[in-house]
Length: 354
Ligand SMILES: *[C@@H]1O[C@H](CO)[C@@H](O)[C@H](O)[C@H]1NC(C)=O
Ligand SMILES: *[C@@H]1O[C@H](CO)[C@@H](O)[C@H](O)[C@H]1NC(C)=O
Image 1 (spheres, rainbow, N blue to C red):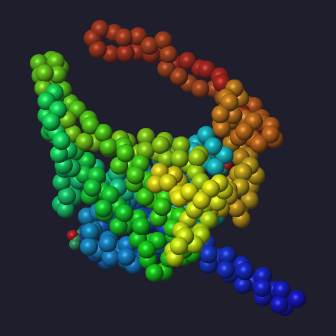
Image 2 (image 1 turned 120 degrees about the vertical axis):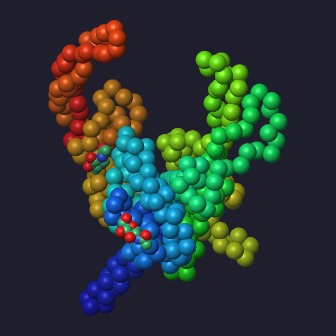
């Protein structure tokens, strides 16, 4: 009996230690926001629980980067929840950062997405900050070498992708490279998914142009290289989340490497998100699995997608209620220049899962 108790205790302790170790990867998402920290004195870096020593050092040496990183943390949390608003797992647990729940801690697909998105967000935020002259250590991104197209000239200030990738990976990969970091498999998983996120960021770089000339005739066009919004990078990463590959750690020659669990022995592709642990279905509440369940979640009765009542409610059925919305209507334009509207009530049926 006593032995059983001790074994249970030590396995619980091991599980706890394991979670604690796994959590190290993205604890920086819990960085204090707003006016809480001014980020102008190097001792501010010590205030941050959850940063690994390498990140604290990076913070001290590059204090000017910290507001970009804090902004990236905010954008990651907002963008993740927006991307998953119509799914059973809706990323709401990310708000508890740096205290994550098992849905994000356990090497799941969801964790893969969050890591990739956060790595992309940091690179994005720094690259943009360079272009808007917020950082003394970098400036506009360069123009392509083969800039020979005569229909426009390069101008403006492009996002500095190389600097964003460089400083971003130094910061977001540090927890996995730290000596303190946890199990090898989860370290490799997080590093890989961070790289996938940065790859998606780099792929989003596009040529953006502005027309000049008499009344927008576009006789002169200046162009620069700019990154797409984080929202479209998140959409791309969500597609990769849906097609993510389950992997295991195997000896490949002398090294240990992540390889796809099912299928052949092909190597993992640079573009695919990988995960180690299968996710629960997130239908019912189970704190041990980090599942909040879908009771009381809104669903769409006529939809066929993940937000449909049948998928969202996992077959439990749903309750309908009517909601009265107040809207602007019968708007009229008056010359010149204002608009008047009436207020109309509209009732809509809403559905929530049982
Ligand atoms: C940092 O910012 C705070 C608040 O803006 C200010 O009170 C403090 O003097 C600043 N410290 C330095 C070293 O500039
Ligand atoms: C996300 O799911 C949780 C748990 O079911 C719920 O409480 C929350 O309101 C949901 N958030 C959104 C934006 O739907």
